[in-house]
Amino acid sequence: MEPVQVNGLPLSLKEVPEEHISTILYNLRKHIPETVHVHEYACMLLKYKRANPDLEIFFWAPGGDYRLGIIFFQLQERSLIGSIYCENEEARKAMETTLMSTTLNLPLRPMTLLSGLTSNSHLAAKPYMDKNSWFDSRGKIYWMPWSTAKELQVHLPEGVEIRELNPEHSDIIDIEWPHSFPGSKQMLERQIRYNFGLGVFRGDDLLSWAIQFYYGGIGAVQTLENEKRKGYGKAVVEAMTKKLGEMQKDVHLNIVEGNETSEAFFKSLGFRFAYDSHWVGKNFNITHTSLS
Image 1 (tube, rainbow, N blue to C red):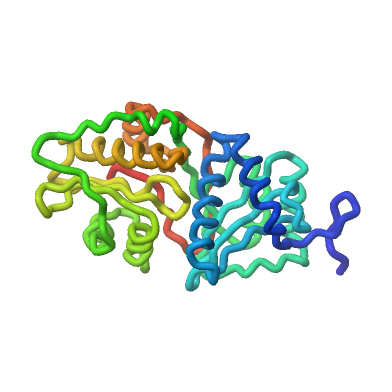
Image 2 (cartoon, one colour):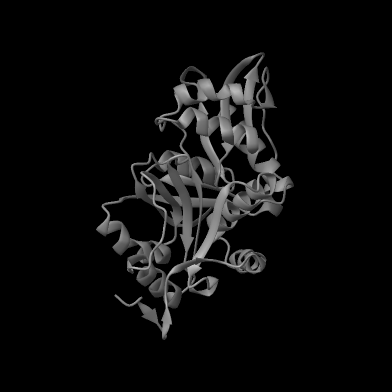
C-alpha cells in the first residue's frame, strides 16, 4: 500500500532535525498557557537527555516537519510516556493521518501514556486511540507564570519547616499516594532524584509533600490524613511554586475532572485555568495532581 499523502507529501513519523528543536520550543512558548504542559515537558526531556545522552528520547513529526504537529516521548523500561501537540487544523489532520497510516513506526510499549493533550491534539490522536482501545481521562490544567510564581509568599505554620525531599521519602509517599501503581515507587524516587521535591517536616517526620514531575509541573501533592487542615499542604505548594518561579519555570499542574476541592485550593493560591486536558494511553495509571 502506498503511504498516505497530505498535500502530495508521503507521511510517516520521522525524527525532527536537532537544529529545529529550539524553534519548536520558541513556538510553543508563544502559545502559553495552552502549551504550558508540552513546553515544560519538552524542556524536561531535553534536560534529561543532556544529563544522559544514552536515554531514548525522541521528537518526531509527520514527515519530520514540526509544523505538522509533534510527538515527543521517552522509552523507559516497558513504558512509552510523552505528549502530542498540534497547533492548528492542518497539523491535526496531518498527525491524525500519520498515526493511522501504514507507515507508522511508533515503538508502542505495553504501558503507554500521552499526557496533557489539548482538545485539538486529542482529536488528532482519537482515531488511533479508538482503534487500539486506549483509555481517555479528562482533567484541567492550571498554571501560573514564573514571574508571578517567584514572588509568591510562603505561609509556614509554626513548629514545622520545609526541606527538600530525598529519594528515601518515596517509600512513605508511595504508600500514601492514592494513584500508586506497580513501579510507582521507583517512578517517584526518580522524580525526587533527578528533579526535586519539597516536604513539610516536624523534626524528622514528613507531614506533607509535593514533587516536580517528569513533565515539569507539580505532582503528588498530599498531606498525611491526621495532619490535614493545618496549612501544611498550602505551605508546601507555595514553596514548590515559588522555587519553580525562581528557576524561571512557568508552573502548572493537572487536576482530575470533577475535583472541585483541588480546583478551589489552587485558585485561592493564584493559579489560573489554562485548558481542558486529556490523558490517554494503554495500561497506565494516570498521575494527576490531587489533594487526597
